[in-house]
Length: 121
Image (cartoon, rainbow, N blue to C red; front, side):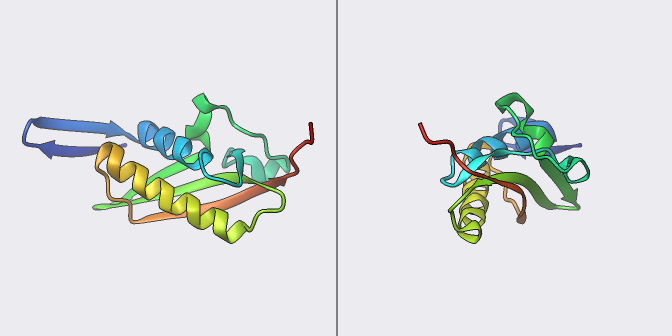
């Protein structure tokens, strides 16, 4: 599926993979995020951190009529306040998608897939 927009210059189609890659990139920039996890990790029991080119596996973009909903599967850093990290990710993703591609997101749902302890140097 994709998002279709009509502008004064013509027709624009944005695929869900592009939206999920932008959302994933915005999320990993937030403080307290170790990385993105695949949405299918719950059955495996181990949360692996996705690389930049695979962010779309950790983000689900759902369209219901004119509403756009995003589900994100993330791994947070140990010692951070999870509720604050989740709120920051929600705000950052909404802001980035609005400024980058002009999309208004109705909801950003955060699913914590794991907590990682950072290694000391």
